[in-house]
Length: 184
Image (cartoon, rainbow, N blue to C red):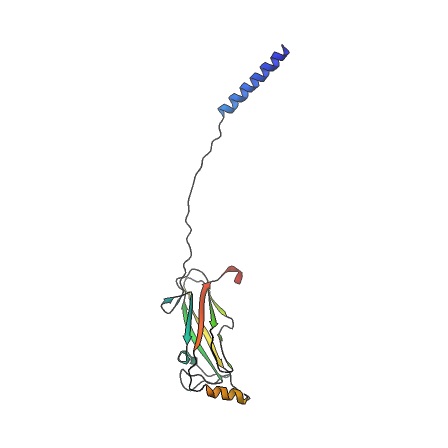
């Protein structure tokens, strides 16, 4: 009888477990949603043309030369002479962009007279146009400097005079790209 009681208790337990688990259920619901992500706009122009990289060739006609306390200017507009500091201004319009823009300038292959150099007026090789919904335009200013001094050697004077009346082309590659957070 003891064995039957154990069997009866075990049968009742199995029956109870079966009833308990069969009367309970696991409810699940699955909901799939969607969302939209809007990307920032990108538009950079020099003049009317969109660009990412453009090579522009400037000549002396693009120069603005002014005298000052450190430099003299050529007496004729659009001409450069030793001891001159001139600028070339390139307007960049990034109004359509919704991110910071970096404009980099790289001087192309050019044979300049001894003592002549071309660089960004900012002193770096790039210029940042910071995102601001009301003002996304900037001028990239290139300095064209032709050093000259009373103490110049005869060889420099000869080279300088040989360039008189000639045309110097200055190829500059401008590249516009988005500024990244790790460039700060």
